[in-house]
Structure formats: structure tokens, C-alpha cells
Amino acid sequence: MDRQAVLEWVQRQYGTLPDDPWARYPHYAVLRSPRGKWYGVMMDVPRDKLGLAGTGNAEVLNVKCAPLLVGSLWLQAGFLPAYHMNKSSWVSILLNGTVSNEEIKNLIDMSYTLVQAKRRRKSRDRED
Image (cartoon, rainbow, N blue to C red):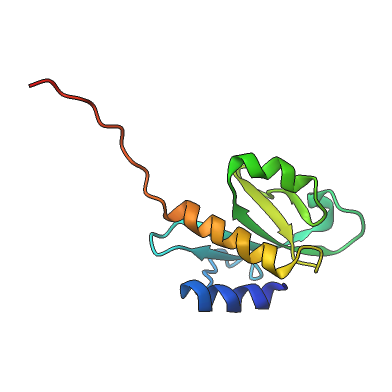
């Protein structure tokens, strides 16, 4: 998937329109859940900042992941430690055709589900 395909898919799947919060970075887009939580960030990042060879920029999609999955994804082609995010629960996906469309969609689904989950407060047993 490329940037446009991802944006079209999330609009069909979740009704999400990209949010462009940084005027300085017009090719960056945030994908937000109805609760306002980020479930994706699309960026055009200089290759050297990602530890990639070559010049120019690479298009990436950051998604939230189950922490147990993050490390194993880094071992696969097309995945990197999350650029500019918490590396223990986010991963960067190169949008260059290396990762299959189906896997990207599955990871977006996971990210959306993770940010939608409400955190439950720990209740204390009260003695009356």
C-alpha cells in the first residue's frame, strides 16, 4: 500500500479523514479514532533518520502494536523501530511495497482497536 491507498482504506473502514496538525510538515498526517486518540501517523522521513541507506525520504506509517509483537516485526523487512514514537508499543511500516497490503491492514486494525480500548480504573474493595 502507498500513502493514498492507506488513506482511502481508513476512510472506508473507519470514516477517518487525515488530520494535518503540523503546517511545517505538509506530508505528515495523523489518523485519529473517534475518541481523538492517534492510531496512525504517516510521515515522509529522511532515510538517514530511519537508519536506511540512500538519499531522499521514505514514506512510513507508524501504528500502535501489542508490545509482544513489536520486536518480532523489527526482524522482518519493511518494519523499523517507530520514528519519533514510543518504540515499545509503536512500529514504523515502510510504505514501499515491502509489507503486504493485508498485513498493513491487519496492523492498522490492531492499532485502532488498541487505542479504542478504554482503560479501566482499578476498583478498590470497600468495607462498609
